[in-house]
Length: 147
Image 1 (cartoon, rainbow, N blue to C red):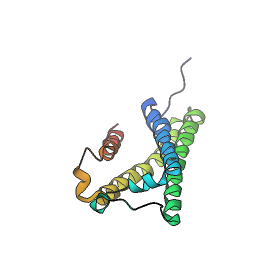
Image 2 (cartoon, rainbow, N blue to C red; image 1 turned 30 degrees about the horizontal axis):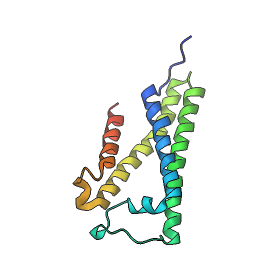
Image 3 (cartoon, rainbow, N blue to C red; image 1 turned 180 degrees about the vertical axis):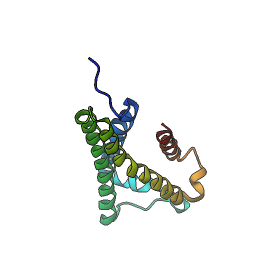
């Protein structure tokens, strides 16, 4: 017996319902266990010298909370996409509308994230070897829109 149709192709589910949530949870774990490295890797520091240890408590809390929000968004993606596929399998149009309502603000957020990151990197944004991840994110975002 064939499974019911889904408005969420398997590749999109794998990316947005499994891969991205996994990465966001890993990001939260990284921020939780090593907030200093997470903090120091956000943008280049003047003369390449990061601030000394320890981070001020407000900075530490901010880094961990931002990591938590990122992880939470990933978990919400996983649960919402799984629920849409499972419980709305026979209502493809409704499934598509709900998934679009989830993915549209996330796409806007990806573009704003890219903009702020590139702004923060300044002239160093063209140092591809140092900031490969940013260009991977840009490529994945463009591929997701094209698909």
